[in-house]
Length: 109
Image (cartoon, rainbow, N blue to C red; front, top):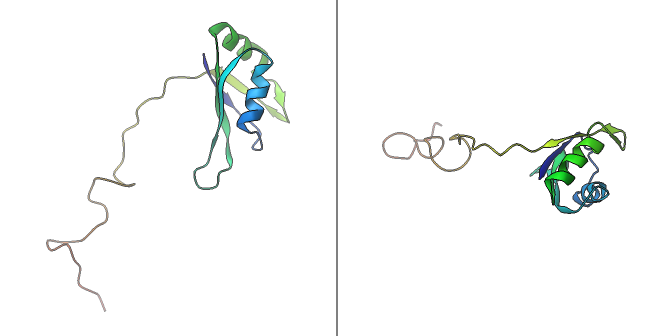
């Protein structure tokens, strides 16, 4: 069972998260999401418990629990929805590149 864990202290590592949930039952995976640019924790992560029973017990025991001064939010993770891609970041669209018919612009000086 995959769980969403929110409101984590920013210094929490994936190892810390795994240790916290291992006290309840076997953990298949645990990861704290990090900002791509800074590498700093984004304050939430995901834990995959080996069984649905362990996952439900983890929710019951850890949701609302104080963890290093923060009240954890633990619930079943929802399936990731495919979000529509925009044309601003890499690939496709007519944003950037050359202008006009020839693909080059005349200098404006």
